[in-house]
Image (tube, rainbow, N blue to C red; front, side, top):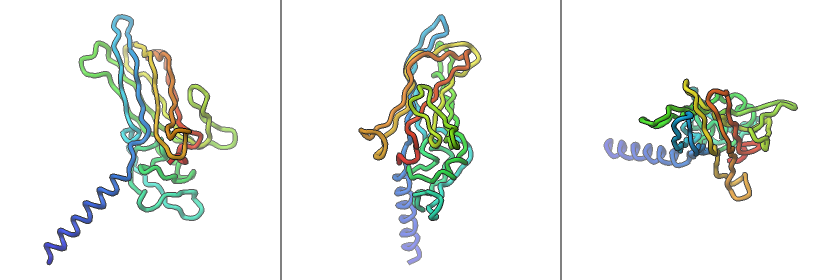
Length: 212
């Protein structure tokens, strides 16, 4: 009987872990497509990273609804993470409420040129959840989304030697609650130079955590 109980217990744990993993999303997807040049060489660029892979290094867990915190998260949503900043640090996409969102640490990642590339380049990625007050808002680069309660992603070219990127940087996600077709997208097309301290900021919604 002891061995049978152990088998049943272990099976239950496996099923629980599988159910928990299944409920998590990949988060918004950032893509960078175009070319990079150093004035002599020009190489194609095709890079991507998901919100789940952009980490802060500080793990947090969404709060459950207590009647006054504005959260619609349940115990099943409480998956510790140091990522998913774009969806308010909620791996399942629940809304943890403004008080929690204002305390989420920023996420960071770096996308590098492939080994052996003629040009050495890198893009620094920063995700942050902005909670303003009164008239204080944050906007994306195009100025089409300005919000005092939403997530933003910034892309900055980085490396010692000068180079420039020309192409399109896109942030996209699927949502049942935002966008007319279930898809939300923000993109910027143009040129970024590594020696001009230029950057592009993208957003997906006026209130990202309400998108689920």
